[in-house]
Length: 370
Image (cartoon, rainbow, N blue to C red; front, side):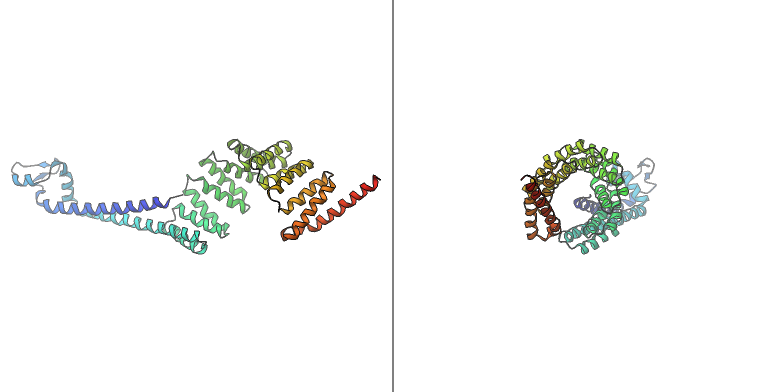
């Protein structure tokens, strides 16, 4: 987006141009006033810009202009009124641009200050004034969209982002933000052109391909989505999101082995990422690799021992693996976490039911072996 310092430089340029024109007018008027008597048709031939008569007073010639200035002087003599009118027009025009640029820069700075202070209503009003001052400046629309998004006004932000994206043709981040906003509004078909434009601007950014793949998947264009995500991984082999998203998509579309391979890669790249472990664990469980799933749930709990649902998931994996004693202990750990955190309370009835059923199985197995 436009840097405010660039806008300030433009303001200074407009002021300087106005000042130079004023100086030029003054010099022209002074020059014309001093030499107007010398530039009459009978003294100078207008075509040759040289004396037409040898009878010109020598003193006047001595005081007269040097040949290099002749054209300017004759222009001043013949078109002085036009010269002044043009100069005044330039001053007025540059002055108008200068004050407009100043208003916009001032609005940006004031709006940013309000935005940083979380005074979003005030910031919105300020940025709207900047948009009204000059609707052609994409940065003003972008700043307004940022405030609207922070206020949760996603629908209002979309047209502002579209204007900003069409103005800022070298900034892919604006198109990505537009696509993300449309995705959040569940309008993936509209988001696709935004991501394609981001790719056209910067075709080496894996984020654009990841997001485009997500849109295509929502529209059930699975093969196209996988193709985009594969290319994202090619661009950034160590991108956690690219590997995880590709793995999940492959897993959901009858490519379990390849999908698990990419999910494992995501975990290797981000061993402290709970979501990565959880996704891989669920993939293992989905394909009946219950002990592998339990291992990932344990890794998840090693990162965050207070994550209650991790114990519940661990209990489920151990139950399916036939490890009933360990499953009961995992469920009991979940109940302890639920007693300290209301967030986990909804899972309590099911956990108690699982414990009761597992205990009955253990008792049945014990009776069978006597």
